[in-house]
Length: 415
Image (cartoon, rainbow, N blue to C red; front, side):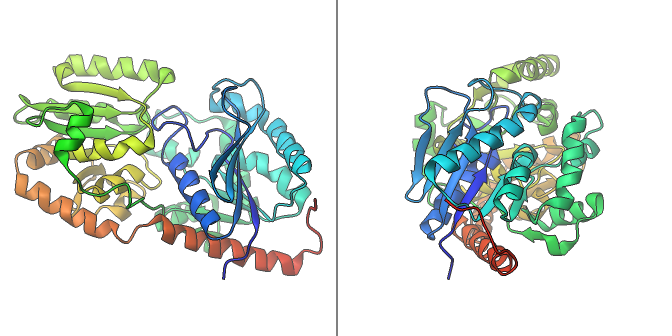
């Protein structure tokens, strides 16, 4: 039976309520919100702390009974880059503590998401004398190895090396990530819990393409190639654009790209220039950031979803696409290699160049029966992925760690 405990969830650099596809928003935002709501349904008390970036959002927002989002003042109440946020980690932690004192709360556990939050959580865990769990979501060292021109700050690289050794437990989304932690940082398997991400099957399931396209004003006679994610070089959208120039029949094809905000302006410009260069500018539609609750219509409108990423810790977009009955064409990297079954639910591309992506996209656009067969297989495979299952595993992990901690710790922070 899950213990009724109170957990401080730190998501400093991005709010779980932020629209997807922005500079700091993606699968992690979905994870934090879905898990917080479901852990609360299991009797856990969850407070999610995020840095305030908008003065118009209330300080406390109820996510679900037992789960709430708390906006913490740290630096200006405006969007900031991750590099600008790192110097604010001490202030963020101090304001979290001030909130705790004002509420007379006691936290049994800290669960930090991403390295910036984990840095803020270090001192809190020490002061509160509670276990500190961390989920990196992405690792700077791995991103650099995946793409030579990728740049990460020394602050991030140093912090992740330290945190890999100091966190009481690291939650990894795949066995691949667990092996990376062991190989790159020497983290023993015993300190890593592998708990996958999930999919909200009540939201993402096959449904009427006609209704979905009507909502998005997409003609029924078009074929839609969909890409979803942050607009940044690591996502490989340039590879997809160059691949679109190689498909056989482009007369009724649209490349629809969901994601990106004002901070992605330079990358939008670069991608548009590439589309002009290879002659597919007229196929390209940028939809910008989209609220997560609107994404089912985008998946249902698509004929194929493509992820040509250089690195993906899990690949939530592919999971949501397959649950929606849409075949995927993805890079054979990270968690994607674990969730996509090559030739059955989509295609894994081992080479990050346009030609093999174009070949599989072309094959799917020209073959209705193959597309439907892969889509059906994807739905069946995704039945094993559910946020309820994920939250159950995470709740059990919390209880296991707290059981050990309670036996070893004689005092915890009170209130």
